Length: 71
Image (cartoon, rainbow, N blue to C red; front, side, top):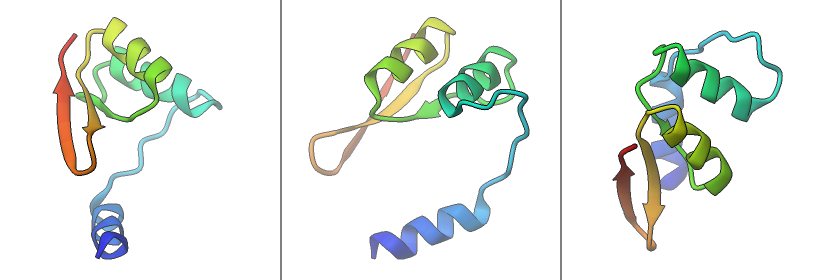
């Protein structure tokens, strides 16, 4: 089931170009330039950078609950 959901989400995703070569830097750049509204991650250092860039972070809380952290 999880693979099916992941495949469905990937099929609907939009590719976004950025000049950054490191994924975390690219996400922060996209947030800073208002090209994306927020980031989904459980990576605490990345989440902190995104929050510092004044964008929300969606992350897993517990086994099956998502939570939005606002800046």
